Amino acid sequence: MTIAEPTTLAHPTHLAEYGTQPEYGTAAFDELVDWVNEIAALTKPDRIHWVDGSDSERQALLGSMVAQGTLIKLNEDKRPNSYLARSGAGDVARLESRTFIASEHKTDAGPTNNWADPAEMRATLDGVFDGSMRGRTMFVVPFSMGKVGGPISQLGVQLTDSPYAVASVEVMTRVGDEITELIADGTPWVRTVHSVGHPLELGEADVAWPSNDEKYIVHFPDTLEVFSFGSGYGGNAILAKKCFALRIASVLGRDQGWMAEHMLLIRVVSPEGRAYHVAAAFPSACGKTNLAMLRPSIRGWTVETIGDDIAWIRPGNDGRLYAINPEAGFFGVAPGTGESTNITAVESLRENVIFTNVALTDDGDVWWEGLTDTVPDHLIDWQGNDWTPDSDRPAAHPNSRFTVSAAQAPSISDDWEEAVPLDVILFGGRRATNVPLVVESFDWNHGAFMGATISSERTAAAEGTVGELRRDPFAMMPFCGYNMADYFGHWIEMGQSAPALPAIYQVNWFRKGDDGRFLWPGFAENSRVIEWIVRRLEGSADAVETPIGRVPAELNLDGIDTTDADLAELFAIDPDSWLAETDLTEEFFKTFDGRVPAELTDQLAAQRDRLQTAKRG
Ligand code: GTP
Ligand code: SPV
Ligand code: MN
View: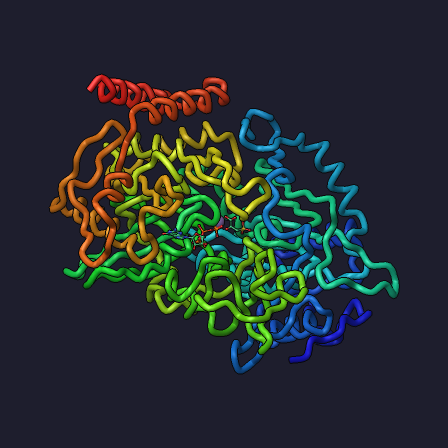
């Protein structure tokens, strides 16, 4: 295995023959060119490269990053066409504290977002972006979220000085000339600008992972623009993902009567061959990719993957809600993804993958905690240091990730790019206590209340103390582009706009016993919960009413050794802790200054009544 030495060339020759500006000669295309030139005048790159999305261009781009030292090419025999990137230690996750909603009015951002005055923020950004691309190439990346030309799809363009971001956006979205053509024809598009914020002086050598200590991830919801500065990592740099497909799209959805959600999307097929579509909102690193690739442990059931992170949902003419996965790839959490937990993901990663911040094996392959039961004797850790099982730190960063095209998952649906009618919506989070394995809502508004009251233990997907419990309504706390209380209201309204609504359930795979062990085996066994839900839809499974919703009268436990005691603990509902939780929800709702819809405060009051009745016994 050879690791290329970083060169001092800012512009490796690999890309020289690519990147010329196309010509369309329409007013709409001129508008794009004017914007590109305007951003270039501000950021002052050495060169502008229009990305055409071709395979040969991609290979040249990857080659330039290997020459530069940003990517390490993995062993071609073990992991064909795959690469490892190592980010700087200060650039490893989303930064919620540096994420801003610059809406005209502060109340339109709401108490759960960092608001910035748009005029002041524009002045700040003009300062930090001034000359920020000096010595670098600015790439113009036209992309489509949803299949190109699809009825629910949206277009965007990302300008970036990060070839790593370009290579990632190419996997996560659809990139290419056919998008530029649609833009030239007048299809609306969203403007996104990204700089790692590390300009190069003439002759200055580049570093493997350029970034800046100062970071801004800024959304202008009123003008549908995104500006991201200083980070090259994940959602901070792949602007089509959280910035556009959730924060900006949630605003479009509010205004146009649809929904942008942090949800996976699957098709469940029962042993009788009936298909059901399930969307599930879990906070970051709480099991979406795992459930999206579920390989049921119970006989006769299959699950097909449609999406693993984001769903765009619209009412159809038949009164049902239809969903698409707007993305084209998976940016998945590596640690904990292994043969025993998510074999489908492991099989999806055999080739054509960009790994970030995982460990490198001595034979030029990758490894992370949980990939295999046996731990290699020696590794190079995510920061490039020697590592052995005695080392007192993880070999892979807890938020290390893989970037791979969705089509490569063996479980992907044949028609995964089409919209599917939703039968079920799940809400979940990481809750060591209180929240049962599964609870059925009484109706849409009660289900929306479940979504609005999700709390979850923090993960490594963003900065903050891992394990600390925090509110994450609808798993959208970091991703809602407007006032969260108005978003609650939008959910209530959507419930009135579609008469044939999906059923809503709350799930929790993460409840622990007093001894700290997970009470539920999780992963493939989560299919048992899905089975009960499907049988409820079909009317053949029974439920028991509790103060917080309905729980299974019986769950299929054939073939697993969950004890009766564990099962009782998994479903235990303690009125006192739930009343305490209800008080906290009331406090949380109060932070919205009366903007929380009455339907949800009514749900809160009704739940409190039911809990008090239960307590009196
Ligand atoms: P984002 O990409 O950040 O939005 O995360 P995600 O929700 O897609 O998370 P993912 O499925 O990648 O899971 C993250 C972690 O949760 C991994 O370490 C998994 O091993 C763990 N996990 C997923 N499902 C289960 C489960 O059923 N039980 C337990 N105990 N852990 C799980
Ligand atoms: C998440 O944090 O929910 C992710 C990863 O899906 S990122 O794209 O970095 O936001
Ligand atoms: Mn996510």
